[in-house]
Length: 177
Image 1 (cartoon, rainbow, N blue to C red):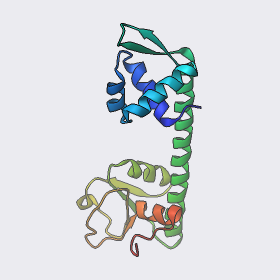
Image 2: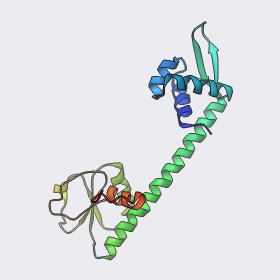
Image 3: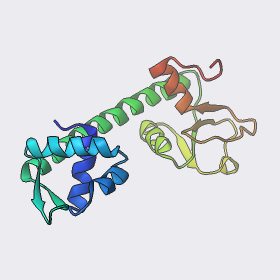
Image 4: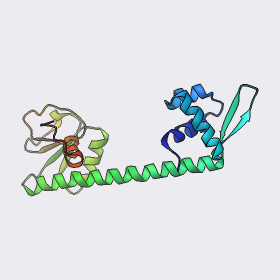
């Protein structure tokens, strides 16, 4: 499997093969020396091939094996991301279910960020409203669930889901940190 920096180099070369090592370094945000080493390693492993354009200029091309490795790495990344979203959704569902079992019957999702989208997935089957502004909340008894958004409470009960997830995964209590 290719490493992250190798993937960056292969990705940049697949976009534009006629890049200098300095340009690759800048685009991939990797030191020039590291780019040189990575390129040699990728050529040796058969993921890239070179073609001399002149005495000083070399063109890099991604081989079919290189494209295959890039596809595998991308596929594994997507699987990990989907698994992480599923795990986060399940944790949010536990938080909501606990609140529901304690008598909270109405929920509001505040925000439009990615975490708010996951919160909405977790709330399927529960009564909820989604808003972008706290002023849009109609039911003042609703529990407001925030994604990664900061908002004034306006006297409403709020759970900052990002903070709750930090507590669950890293044992970080934001109030006492």
